[in-house]
Image 1 (cartoon, helix red, strand yellow):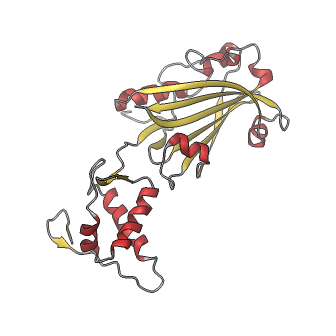
Image 2: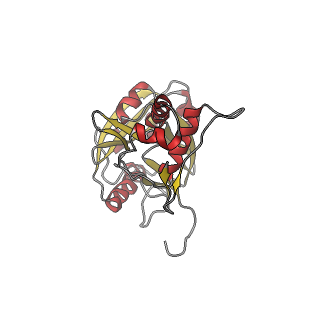
Image 3: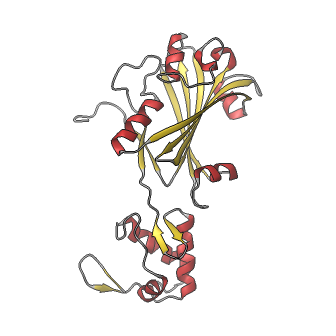
Length: 272
């Protein structure tokens, strides 16, 4: 039994009826509901197994299986010798689509590097990033969007971002080699002000983009880098940038779903 916000004692009955999900899944669903309602806060311990047994009238193994489900989802974390706690990491709002607050040459949007920096400051977080530049053979999803030949080489510019040391996003932007040649995009270091500056200097002014959003489970390398629970998916944003002449770059950004929320702000909004 447990007290609800009104103070009275309530016992949850999750006995299985015809066609219902297994008992541990229904227990996990109710614990998830209570977490979403804010009954426990980030970093706080979940009630011990014996207490949950009494609250729900179930066996110890049912409680353990239910908790396993929420650990896999990234909602809970087990601390050896201490108990089970709510995962202590805030969700960051990332403005994936927002008009720039100041004139930004080469793009109709706020550059991602600037958006991340602004969001980190607002959230009181420390943003760090590692940068890589490579020449690779493009996969078909990239060549199709750039309208280049299958297997053609592209310039890949990768940014690995961390917030307060925690892995946050992997951003990979692909450029046709012919476009990137003789520009700062070929440098092995980040372009000051973002790649948009290099594009604008070279006369490639973006006029629009197309975003595609999907969700999938991480591969082993991604799971190791993000350090997420085994049941936490990735959000994948695939953005194709266009000039008046056609597509010039494709950016794939991967976010861990338990610590990011993508925000799309369109049009004018009074008081914003």
